[in-house]
Length: 100
Image (cartoon, rainbow, N blue to C red; front, side, top):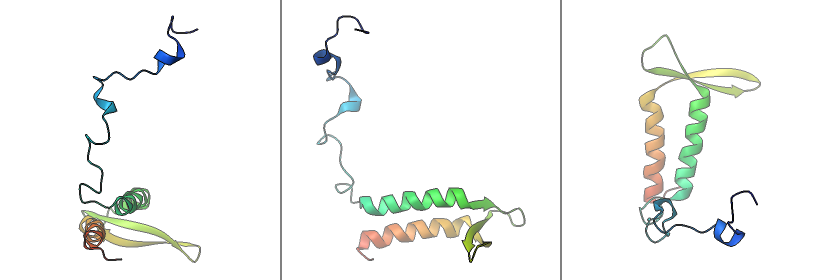
């Protein structure tokens, strides 16, 4: 066997000093932190789309062009970074209040 005389039973033994393998009661989950996992999944998904479709706009400092496809044509809407951050903050705050 490739790895000396380690049997399959001892091959997967977890070292108790390994800090990466903490029990679930040692680390708080998102609900305990007051965060909704579904909302944070949405925020992450929005971040993926923002990073993919938001491009620097050279005409105006600190602004971006949001590219989107409508009726088969690419269109762009000029957004500032503050507007993008505002959308994410608004989504998180509404979720914290329980709004849909």
